[in-house]
Amino acid sequence: MADMTDVARLQLAAWHAAYRRLLADDFLDGLTVEGIAGYHGRHFDAAQNPNLDRSAFLVAEMTVPPAEGKKRPTKTIVGMVRGGPTREKTAAGDPVPPEVPKKYAIELFAIHVEPTAQRRGVGRQLFGAFIDAAKKKMPDAALVLWVLKDNSNARGFYRKLGGSVVGECELTLGGKKYPQVAYGWPKYPNITQT
Ligand SMILES: CC(C)(COP(=O)(O)OP(=O)(O)OC[C@H]1O[C@@H](n2cnc3c(N)ncnc32)[C@H](O)[C@@H]1OP(=O)(O)O)[C@@H](O)C(=O)NCCC(=O)NCCS
Image 1 (cartoon, rainbow, N blue to C red):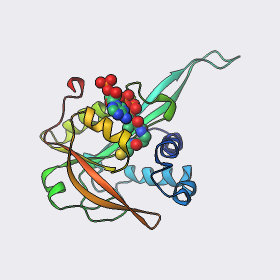
Image 2 (tube, rainbow, N blue to C red):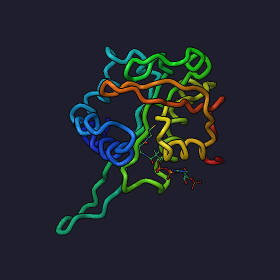
Image 3 (tube, rainbow, N blue to C red):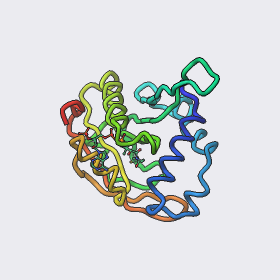
């Protein structure tokens, strides 16, 4: 299992870079590596994640050349993806349109790439690896994910991978409500052909 602190560190960097104008500053500034690591750590706790056997949590690593005076290259985590059976509420407990979980059995909960590693194919590889893992557990599922309506970069990425908008809901973060849209794929996409 990946070091959750490294995963949380990259997610925090990705959120700070991508969400600064999209979410309230006090919410973003209050996020901590420890808090995010704790949240993701619950994924691996069967008592808190009853769908653990049908879920996937994957990371992308990049090899970094040896630092001065060191012999060995090191590996650093530059991306993460996580998902499982589609939730009937958002991560914050907001309702989602009931037809979404009914129609789309697998949900990609989160995908983040470290800001300096973006637009180099890491997100596409992670997305493809998630689909490969999900197929082994739920072969015939349709795929869905939620994204902030104003996150135009991520929406461009999902469009490029063949997704289309299939629903809308709100997400409550730090006491504020933000509009979200769902991107759906009626069957698993072939990520190498989008
Ligand atoms: C969204 C995100 C995961 C994409 O990962 P990435 O590594 O930058 O994306 P890739 O380089 O693998 O791009 C894959 C394809 O999508 C396209 N793409 C990526 N970002 C795009 C954008 N903003 N607009 C249009 N197309 C885009 C790329 O051009 C590429 O197409 P190609 O393979 O045909 O050349 C990453 O930018 C990220 O972590 N963003 C911040 C956090 C975030 O918003 N996460 C999503 C939360 S819902």
